[in-house]
Length: 114
Length: 118
Image (tube, rainbow over all chains, first blue to last red; front, side):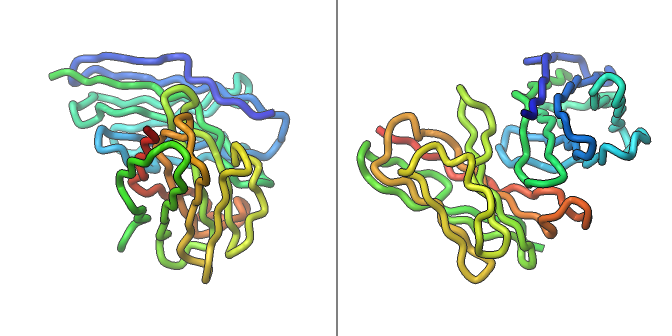
């Protein structure tokens, strides 16, 4: 079975601090896909990134960066110089090569205070 | 372009009534997904469509739940004889491709329908 664990239920930081959101996944498949989604207070899930299991290269997009480590089954997300607009619930998700459903973690609430 | 749209945005119904929730995917997206988000269960997969067929219905919680998709576009999720435990936000998503190997696999979500069963 597949499982995604986001151990951090809630994180509070002050604006401009860096913050890392942890994601640990479980799967027996050798090919799989990992995702991060953002759910702002408005409620709509926003796609942030997809990573394939065969591509361990880390990625940076502006203030966002992702660290994928197969050895520890982790796909962590770092926001540099956080801003109030980053306040949201962040979900990590996993899908398999065959079968298209997303298995989500419980989410991490990020509160960025000014 | 237009994103995924869902209607109604809110629905309050009495226990035992049937409800229909509608999803309009992004134009040209071949795959369509339904999820449910509730406080106790988090985000759960319900069903997935590839064109008009549903290869994976594994997440439907009971036979009171059904879904269809017509014309490779609009989808309707129907809940019969609603129960209080059905109260949740029902989310629809679509993706350009239904095969991860083909890329463009990421799912784009609609705003959801908040269902409250009284």
